[in-house]
Image (cartoon, rainbow, N blue to C red):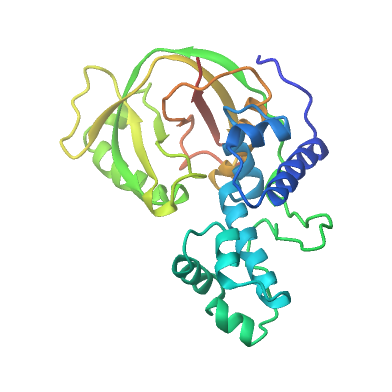
Amino acid sequence: MLPMRTATRTDYRERIVDVVAYLAEHLDRVPDLGTLAEVGGFSPFWFHRVFVAAVGESPATISRRMRLERAAWRLRTTRQPLVEIAFDAGFNDQAAFTRAFRNAYGATPGRFRSEHMPAHELPSISEIHFSPTGTPYRICLPRLEPIDMNIEYVTLEPRRYAYLRHVGPYPEIGSTFGKMADIAGPAGLVNDPEALFVGVYHNDPSATPPEELQSDAGITVSDTMVIPDELQIGTLAGGRYAKGVHKGSYSKMGESWMAFWSTLQTTDAKPRMESPFELYINDMETTPEDELITELYAAIE
């Protein structure tokens, strides 16, 4: 098993609040991820995934929103020139600031000021907002409930898989799996007793727009298996991996990945540049939903 610190939900909340407070206190510049990881006591290798999994937004997104909210508050409460407000909000010119502000608030900065529009808080999953009084920030962390997961080191041999590429939000990969199975079934790929469905996830969802995410809906195949032309062939790289296990509905997979990354960051493991993947151990059509087993893998040095 991996060596790990004892981590509690309260501990994680306090550490993430420390990071958010640091962001709020340094709105005039966006601290680098290494600095934020150090502030929260997180491993720099896993910090970004852990933060986004817990909060629902990246530090850059939060910082940008708070700068715009600060700009809106200053428009309402001060006579500071627009060009200065724009510069303080991180924009090099007033035109770019006007476009971003209008997209966020539905009004230009000048109209927002002249009509005394009341609200400066923008919609947010985390409910993290600019606070002009410096009072504690309201932080909603609904994703923070699962914290610990048993993780072990394993060494895997390289393994071929046949797949269809899915482009779009990861939770929507199910339809691509259906198309892949419609091809793999008649070709006999599912008849191999050692075959497993596999999902390979190539992009960090905390840093990539949902519509641009790329993943593979696949099935593992032997070296001698003949692959239909409609499917592509990939390889799960061999080497060391951190492995976790999710039990239950696939709809709860995100919570398990959050626990996986959160627990992994308490270790000394360093990532390798290989895509994380899931192996689906049993047949979802014949297995009760609460008994489904999915293995989670992340490559490590």
